[in-house]
Structure formats: C-alpha cells, structure tokens
Amino acid sequence: MLPRGRAGLLWGLVGVAAFSFTVPFTRVAVAGLSPLFVGSGRAAVAAAVAALALVLTRQPMPRGAQWWRLGVVAGGVVVGFPFLTSFALQSAPASHGAVVIGLLPAATAVVAVLRVGERPARSFWVFAALGALAAVGFATLQGGALGELHRSDLLLLGAVVAAAVGYAEGGVLSRELGSWQTISWALVVAAPVTVALTAWSVAGQPPQATGSQWLAFAYLALVSMYLGFFAWYRGLALGPMAQVSQVQLVQPVLTIGWAAVLLHEPITWPTVLGGLAVVACATLAVRTRLARKDPS
Image (tube, rainbow, N blue to C red):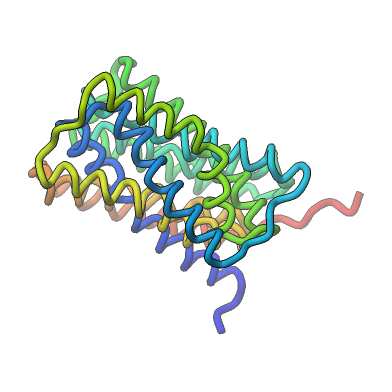
C-alpha cells in the first residue's frame, strides 16, 4: 500500500490527466453549441448521473452545515468554472486558456492555507511561485500573450478563483462525505439552476452540432464535470492539500499537447523546454514537506 502522501499525489495526477482535456474540448464544443448550453448542460447531465449513483448506492444525506459547504463547491466547480471558461473560450484559443489556468495550482494552495490552516515551508512557496511563472511563460510561448487583459482574460481569471475555492472546500468536505459523494451532492445541489439554464438555452437556441462537438460535450459532462473529480477530490482529501494542488502545474503541458493533436496547434522546441520546466517545478513543490505548526 502506498504511503498516504504518495497516494494523494497519484490520485491527484489521475484527476489532472482527466481535466487536461477540458480546455480543448470546451473549445471544440462551443464552436457549434452555445456557451450557455455547454456550461449548464454538462452540469445538468452530470447531475442526473450523480443522482442515480447516490440513489443506487443509498448514500446518507449530508447534514447541517455540510449543505451550505456543498453550495460553495457547487458555486465554484459546477457553476463558476464551467460557465466562465465556456464563455471565455468562445474567443480565446485553447493555448490562451492554458495561460491563465496555469495559475490555478498556486491559487488552490493559497485557498487551502486560508481554509484549513496548512502551513507550507517557505521553499514550497518559492517552487509554487516559480511553477506558476513557468506555466504562464510556457503557455505564452504558444500564443497566449498577456500584454493586455481582454474580456476572455477576466473570465478565465474568474474561473481560476472559482475553481480554487471549489477545490479547497471540496477537498475538505471529501474527508467527511467521500470524494465521489462530494461532487455528486454538489451537482445535485446545483441541479435546479443548471437544469433551468439548460432548458432556457435550448428554448432560445436549439442545439445543433457535429458529431465531434457532441462527443466533446459528452466528455465535458461525464469526465470533466464528474468522473475526474472522483480522483481529484480523493487526492486532495488524502493531502497535504497545498502539495497535491501543485500536481496541476503539469496540466498546461498536457492541455497544449492535446490542443496540438485535436486543434492542430504547433509544438516547438520552446514548448518542450517550457514543459520540462513546469514539470520540474511541480516535482520540487510536491516533494517539499509542510512546515510544522507552531506549538502555540
């Protein structure tokens, strides 16, 4: 059996691998489907699957404050991140999305520190900052220039904040409810909103898309919105949360790799070197031990 820390990192990496397709597949989906339908529909479909899983396995109902905490998770990862990225990627290329989303590990680490009182060593913050800079620099070489902020940049920054809050709270709640149960209940909590918005979107603009666009939507609904969180929240629950979050530093590398395959974006030597730098920073960050808390 793997030590708890290594198991957390392994589960986190599985989750990141699943999430790495989210940006390019969102870009594919919104080319034919409205961003409102993509953002709400993927959550509505995932909520139906989650509700069925909860009923079939006879999961106990959350209690007391767990309900509003599930609301925080739902607001961050069920509503906030999918909606904001769907609208942003209407105009921004996948590589540009990877630029800003590369800031997510550092944002999650900060929220984890504020939420659960983890106190990483100074070296952790150094490597986390270097990793964020490496991720941004790497993706910028692929055409995501940050010389000025556009509407899509602001939407993506909002998505990063929403996801960081949802990840941190979901990681804590997973220690109480379980990993897949947490995302399942969060989807159910958000279902009245996501189903209503999906119905409104369909009424206003009936969805018409190609086969590949529907397949991209299906992945977003079943994997990005649901199954990927089984592994991700499991990893965050095992923790340490601040360290496991840094595994996401490899996501821009994977994302741009998939974008090259799916969207035919070129990969150059700077891409390879930048990718190695991002992975190196992630490795150093996750191997840094947490500083001991003061006895006071």
